Image (cartoon, rainbow, N blue to C red; front, top):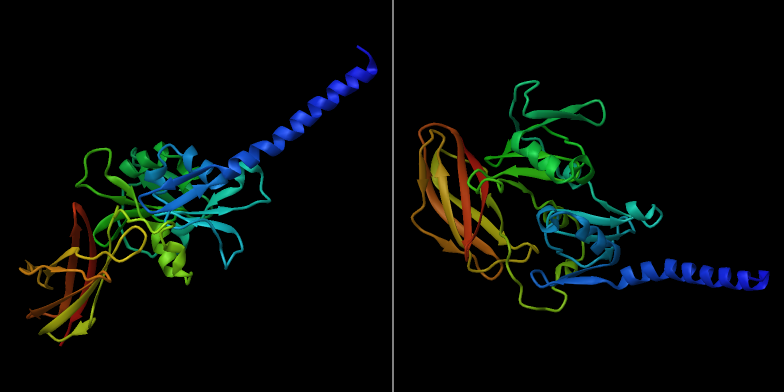
Length: 318
C-alpha cells in the first residue's frame, strides 16, 4: 500500500472517529422520556442519569418540573419529588449531573434516639470531625441503593420527627414506615417537593407541560392552628392544606383530626371535612383541660386510596 493510500485511509478513519464523538452527545441530547403521571419530560444527560439508577422512581420520584436555568445558580436544574438534578458542564462526563444537598439544606434537628455503641447492626460514617451511625433497616437500604455515592454521608443519627423515625443524609432523608410490608418500610422523603416550595421560583415551572389531566400519585399535608397558645379551654381552628406530588392543590380530600390532650386522652373528631378547590380545609373544635400542656393534633388526609398525615400542636396555658 502506497504512502498516499495509507494517508487517505487514516484520514477517513479520523473523520469517522471525530464524527462519532460529536454524534453520541447529539443523540443523547435529543433522547427524552415523557411522564404522564406529572406531565413533565426528562431529556439528555438528566435522563441518562435518571435511568442509570437501579430504581429511579424509588430514589428520585417523578419529575415535577421541566429542566430550567436556575435563576439563583445559573445552572441547568430539574426538580423531582425526592431530589434535584444540577448540570455542571465543566466537569468530566461522568460527573456532570449532580444531586443537590437537599438533606443539608432542609435539616432541622429532631428528638435524638440513642442506640448502643458498636452494635453489629450499625455502621459509623464520618466525613469531617463528626461521625454518625446508620443502623438496621436504614443501613440495609443505604447499602442496597448506592451508599455514600447516592445519598451522601449521614448528617444526623436516628431521630423522631412528627411521630416517625427518620435519619438525614446530605442528599436525602430516610423515613421508617412500620405499617408497610417487609422490604418496603424504608422510604425517602419528598425533599425535592419540599425544597421547591421554599424557593421563590416562578410557579409556572410546576405547570403540566401539555395541560393534560394530572394523575395524583401522593398527598402532601400541612396543618397549622389559628392560635399556638390558648387558655385551658375554648375553641381552636386548624387550617389544613393538601397538595399533590406537584404541589398543586388537591380538592375533595377527606380530612380527619385526632386530638391528644396534655393528660394523654385521645379523641377523634366525629366529623370529617373535605378540601375545597384550593386544597384547603378548616376544622373548628372545642377543647378543655385541667392541666396546662401541649395538645397534639394528628391530621389525616385521604383520597382514592392515597393517605398521608401531618402533626401539629398548640399549648394550653393559664
